[in-house]
Image (cartoon, rainbow, N blue to C red; front, side):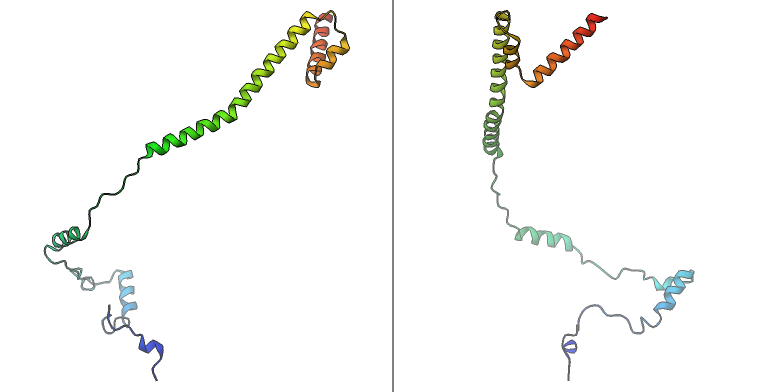
Amino acid sequence: MKTELDNNKITNGFITPNDYFDNLSDRIIEKINGEASSNLIPITSGFSVPEDYFVKNEAKLLAKVNFTEAKVVSLKHTLHKVSGIAAVLLLTIVSPMLYHSTETKNNELVEMSYLQLHSEELSVYEVGSMLDDKELIELENELIYNNLNNIN
């Protein structure tokens, strides 16, 4: 009864010479010790190429290859579209920030001019109600600094 391995034996391919593995270890030890004879190394490689092999195959290969022009996609149109979209997004993000900062500066200038014109009419409490916490702290620090300079 034959097993599946017996049925699938490889019958073609590379074969080793008879008794190759019997004296293989002895030959390796000889090479390591430097006692190897030059007859162990073959003079030729064993492979040979027929004459005009590469010339003939090149012509066959070029005959089989189809030279067709590939479709070229221009990136200019895509680049214009993407840069336009990026510019619109940038403007929509940045313009509110610029508008807000300009509007805030204008409001601060109006407040300062109003306070300068009506400084005699305003009480301390009215001025304090117009300032936020950060501005109050800055004002306190400035007053303390001025008082220290006046003492010296």
